[in-house]
Each structure stands twice: as C-alpha cells, then as structure tokens.
Image 1 (tube, rainbow over the protein chains, first blue to last red):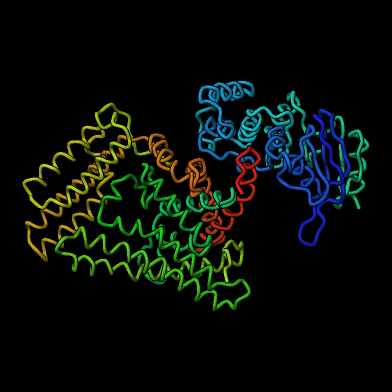
Image 2 (cartoon, chains in turn yellow, cyan, blue):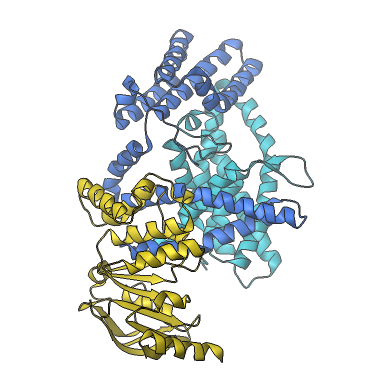
Length: 226
Length: 187
Length: 201
C-alpha cells in the first residue's frame, strides 16, 4: 500500500487548505494530528478522493485519485467522526450490504460476505437490529464493518473516538489495533497513536513534523501550547 | 441530483413524517389544532426549493403507498389514496414544486426582511394552498357525485387553518434561510 | 419505529404478484366508478370487506386502520343524503368504501421489499432516459426509515430544552432548530455514502 502526494495543493475560494505537499506513505500504522483547521482532514480526504487536489496529484498504489477515481477509492475505506452519520440504512445487515450492492455482486455472495464480516467483528448477533438502537461504540464498529466488507487495503479513520465514552473508546482502540489492513488515524486522542509506526503533524496547511510518535507528538504539543 | 441532494430530500421527507407523528400543536392565539404534515409541504418548497421540495413530498407519498405509517397520526397504505381526500395528497407534490418555484424566484438573501417574508408567504399560499386545492377539490367533487357543491363548499372550512400554516411556513422559511440557507436562487 | 403495514399470511391475495394486485385495484376503481347500481355495488362492498378479512388481519385491526378514511367517506355520503337522496348516499358509500377496503387488503398483503422490487422494475425504462435511478430511490427510502427515529428523538430533546427553560413548546421555536440541525447533517451523511462508492454528480 503506497500513497504518494506530489505537490498536492488544495485551495478553496480565497484560502489555502493545504500547501503543496510531497509525501510518500507506506507504513502499516500512521497517525495524523493537528489543530482544527490545520489541513489534516483535507489531507486525509485527498487519499480517498472525497477532495480533489487543486494542483498536483495523489496516487494510491499507482492509481491517481482523479483519473482513476473509482479504482483508487475502492482501495480505501473511510470512517467518519459521528457514528450516526455513517449508518444509512435502517437494519445493520442491510447497511453492510449497501457497499457490496454498489459493486453489482450476486445476492448470495453479498449475504456470505456480510455474515463473514459480522462474525469477524463479533457482531453477528446485531445483524437484524435497528441501527438507531445501537450504542455509539456498536455503531462505530458496525460502520467499520460496513466499510471493510468491500475489502479495501487501507482504512482511514477521522477522529473515530471523539464522540464515544471510555468503554466504547477502548473497544475501538482494540479493534483498530487488531486490523490486518493498513490504518491511518486522524485523532486528538494521542494515546490512540502512541504505538504507531509514523505520526504526521499538520499546522496551518503544512506538514510541521513527520517522525516516530514520541517526537511528533512532542512537536505537536509545542505547537498547541503557543 | 447529487448524493447530497438525495440525502437532503430523504432527510426532509423524514422531517415531514415526524411532523405527522407529533401531536397536533395549538398556536397560542387561535384554539385550532394544526396537523403539521401539510405544513411540511410548504416548508419543503420554501426551504429546499422546487425540485428537491417536490421530491421530498413525493418520497413521503411513496413510503405511504408501499405500506409505511407515515401519514398524519400514523396512517398509511393504499387505503388513504383510495379515499375522497386523495386529490389533496397528490396535489401536495405540485404544491411543493410551485411553492419552491416562487420562493426560488422571489427570495434573495440580501433582501429586506419584509420582502423575504412576503415572498415566502406568497409561495406558501399559492403553492401550499391554491395548487393543492386545485388537485384536491376536483377529486373530492368527482367522488361526491351529485352532492359535489356541498362537499366543495364544506372543504373550504380548512382554509383558515391552512392560512395559519402558510404564516408559520413564512416565518420558518425565513428563519431557516437566515440560519442555514439551502434555497437555490434563480434570477 | 416505522413498522410496515403488511401482515404475515398465506391467503390468495398474499400469493398474488404485486403487479397483479395493482392492476386489480385499478380495474376495480374504474369499475366501481362506472357502475351506479346498488345491486352491484352492495355485493362489491361485501366482497371487498371479505377480501380484507381473508388476509387474516382481524376485524379490529382492519377497522382501526381504515376508520379515518371511512369517516371521510361517510361524510361525503352524508352530504349526498342531505343534498341529493338516501339512494345516492348508499351508492356513494358502497362505491368508495369498497375501494378503500380493497386498497387496505392490498396493503396488508404486500411487503415493502415486494413493492420496492416492483418499483425498480417499473423505473427501468425511465432510467434509460436518465430521469431517475432505482438505486437512488431505494437509498432514499432506506434513509428515511433510518432517520425518522433520530429526528423524532431530536425533536423531543428540543422540546425538553424548551420546557427546561420555561418556554412554551411552539411550532416555530421547535421546528426551525429541528430542520436546521437535521439538514446540516446532510453533508457528512452524503460524504459517508460517497466514500462507500455510491458517487453521483
């Protein structure tokens, strides 16, 4: 799993969200931190093509996120902050099947893959439950399952534990730790990324630090302090 | 329609359904309970515009037709469409569309407050009342057979309540425009 | 929260395909409005009532579901009684009530997914002209069912906050925040949908 940013820039009307970024990512566990508005969210959304670079390019395993949008997006799964915004169909199993339906798979295969992923995360008993009856942690777990069922190589999580209580936070932390896929986590919860391979610190649209967690987090604390 | 439009339409349809589940609200100054669902038609046009507003209302009708209890008071199913008031239900869709069309054309974000109020009121009355009645009354008179004059006259008893709803839609439309504008602006 | 109105069963109507039932309903509507003879309309009403009960729904539930519409039918019939004649009132009542009960029988014997499949089939010709995609419609239906409970509970939170501040629960002060807060979510929900490969322009 290789992600390459080549002079990737993102400009909105009048403002620069991300200054030209050159970066190559291939580690299994990458953390991204930064103050709100630092560009970290924009950078993460460049990877799965939800945001297109105004200049420059982003490739995922050689696939350009603009030219080969669909294929590139197929390689990444994206988890958002609010669990409630991600489950879009009323019954859990239906929601998980949603991602597969878009790929035109046969009904039998969809059912099989849904059951497999539910079992993998230990939530088979929740299959027929109504999504709005699940706890925050269960919902976030279900969201992860529904995103991973299509088999992406990379999972990006954007502040996944922000709205969860301590118990559910621990659940997500354990789940993420056990994922064989590559994982990129954007978070304010620094404990979550302590054991990661690499941490990027963004500040005012630029990469301010890029190293092992200890040093990077130290740099981040300095930035946040002033 | 973009994905965002589909979500807006679905969320608004869900709001209209919720309006039907709420107990009828009494406005302070007139002791007439308002069934909020037809208010939802005017709001759909005023807030989402013609296309999305009509789509939201159509979506609610579809949900009701396929057997979900989405109409006022938890009713649903095809029986509602077989009754004398079916014309009003069907008329909700063009009603929301016309309401939205007028709102899109008349309302500008940089207008004086009074102009915006009057534009939303016009949209709600013409779309939410006139157009809806245009569909509702003919069907009602048709099923009434020879007593059509009596029933048509009797149906006008809902007009005062509907005018109140138009006022509420006017105020709410403007407030939502101020807080989270979604109305497409057309010249 | 939103429980579908169809009921389990194995009656002839249950086994009939959706399209057949809709055609039946439509033909019945045409027939009922063309005919004015009580000798035909009264049996038609009896037949409809029989069909509704044959679905296994039970008289109480059947009445509860249709009573509001039947009440409006009664009002129209009453208008006929007053302005025209008792005979005409009976004609109008039998005709409309027969249609209402038949429609209720179709609803009771047809599940949501059966309807949605039929809609997908009916939309296929329209899809070719780019008017509407069946996938969009089924997503929209799912989204509504999914979010109605959330929005209802958000309304309750808003009403509770009002009461906590000693404010009367009025439509304006509750509906405006309800609408704004709900519609604001549309962006992230749309992003979550697109992130899973649904992308529309």
